[in-house]
Image (tube, rainbow, N blue to C red; front, side):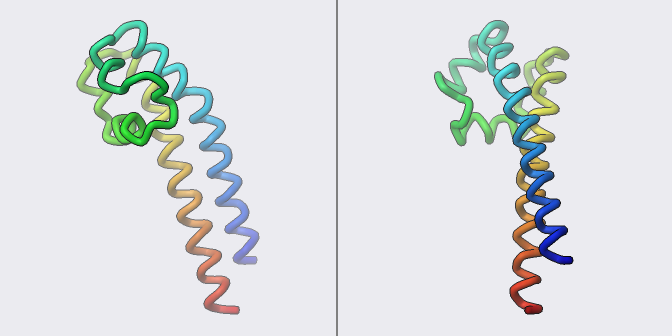
Amino acid sequence: MILFFALLFVATAIAGFCALVIFWPLTLVHVRDRHPDIAEQLGPGAFMKPAALAWLMRGDYLSADDRSLNGLATPARVSVMVIVLGLGMAGLLWLAFEILK
């Protein structure tokens, strides 16, 4: 039963990844078109750059004071959190399974 719940957490992380694939490119296009200073800071090809993902996770987009950017970046930020928490919980349950086995 523990491994079943671990698998559910992996499925949740996959759902978070799907949301990230939708909202993060939209956020980057919005940044490219309307915020050249932030786009320069993130650099080209920012989709999977650790620095760009850290910018997203820190919520630095809130300082731009752009409601449209907030509306695109917030779901991307939540999806990254879902990925991290889902994989973390799956890992903990797998570890619990190995210990209790």
